[in-house]
Length: 91
Image 1 (spheres, rainbow, N blue to C red):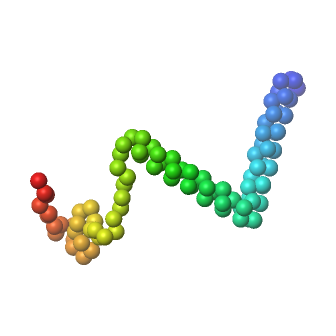
Image 2 (cartoon, rainbow, N blue to C red):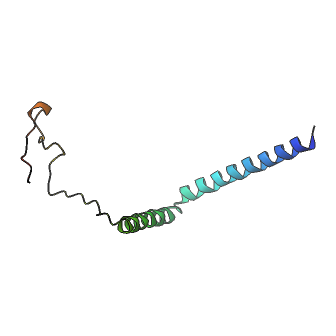
Image 3 (cartoon, rainbow, N blue to C red):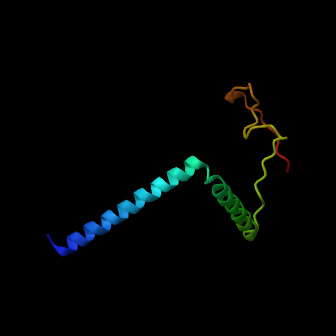
């Protein structure tokens, strides 16, 4: 065998071993519930970064109001699609 082939085979084996070990450690941590706080922290950081980006781009935040209660087409819960209500636009 060539020395380069042995070297590459050893490198690939080492990489696969590291990946398998990391999977086992993460599986153990998930079973113990140790990843709950770090995942929550990452989600909070992502939300903070999103808000900062929206402010940087000077875009309004997307607010979903539950008080409106309508749908995008405003057909209501029991109206078929062909009986859609037309609402005059405010000009």
